[in-house]
Amino acid sequence: MKLFLTLTCVLFGCSLKAQSIIIPRNAIELEEQRLNILQLGVKAMGVSVTTPAKYIEINHSILPFICQAPPYPRMGSHIFFAFLKKDSSVMITIALLERDSLDYVRDKATINRVRPDAILYNPDKVWRYNFQDLADTINHKSQFYSAKKLKNFNADSGVEFYMTCTNLFLDKYKIERAIILDKKYRGIIEIYYFVRQNAVVNIKKELKNAPKMISYIKKG
Image (cartoon, rainbow, N blue to C red; front, side, top):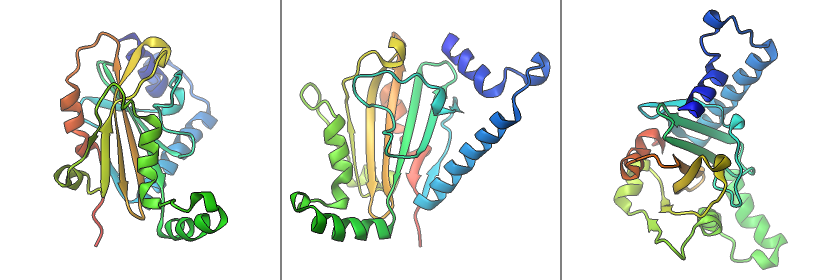
């Protein structure tokens, strides 16, 4: 609860008028700029993002990510979302890795020509490469999504998997599960679920609600 209150105070000023806290103008402008970038990126990639019930959206940049493996949105992406459950038991982070039609064609034609060692490179399999880099497949079985599950996200491909991570959020949280989704010409969605140490959480229920939180928008 202490972490939740701290994050809430940082984000919402703990009732600014009541506490007479003054936020510098540049801080407000930076936050507005961050939100504008998020919305532009979401529109460009064609996804729908909704804050889950009983969660609040937080600024991911204030989170103390400390981990031996990267279970957080990878730095190569630039569109981030983070949601914190109001009881602070669960944190969800999302990264969107854009790929438009021109990127796809350029990758397919250029990378294979310039890099002979990447002759088997396929833009449609980048999501799988990301999954293989992160997943703990030795101790846990990964679940590749069926057509029925993919339809809920309007995705072409997807996988749910486990990860190994230590010293996360100064040992206050553990990574419980991750999801990677892909849609051709649109990009990759990476979702990470963190559970507070010793918290009792129905992770299956949290995962089941994922399509309500984010999905690719149907076009045409």
